[in-house]
Picture 1: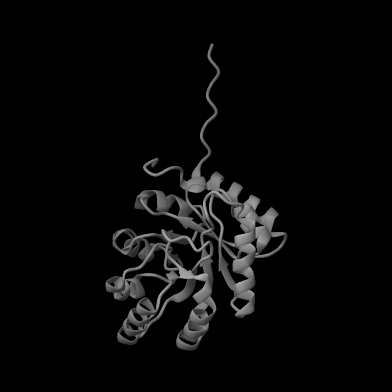
Picture 2: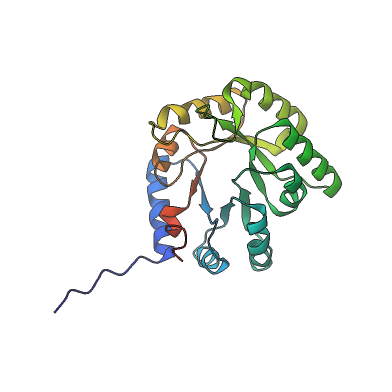
Length: 225
């Protein structure tokens, strides 16, 4: 008789296991799990909500605008982050939809967000995205320009500017880049550091992350619903 295959863990079990790993790495600090739900259907997000997950990250305004407004009706404490690049013509939609925008990276986007916030009477929390590896193919403010940009954004947005976000180079040890980002946030007195993804979140937490963005380790690969 063939052995019965080991059942796949439930989403609730996967979330619990990830949180346990995060807690061990954090050694008593609070670290937020941002569940990266891009490309995932609302039905899977509902399962995560049922398991107690409340913070989600989406890459595209249009996709989030379809999935999340109905979910907010039943879960008003849901916390939605934009973690992908934001076009200036989507600034108003983003201001209305997201609780945090993690990808503020250029003056024109700051202008668009400020105008949308004034028009709508609301402004999400913001993170400056730093191109911590100075990679030409990646979004984010260049390191050489980061200090001046961060100071300008603090002056412009005040307490709504909460911290920094970065993605290290793919094929490099991420720890030095994480430490640089944390040091930059410390220098500017910013409390939030969104660093670390599925492959390196424990390293990021050890380096001082306050938020980690986890998708594939939580929901599985794209299309694996």
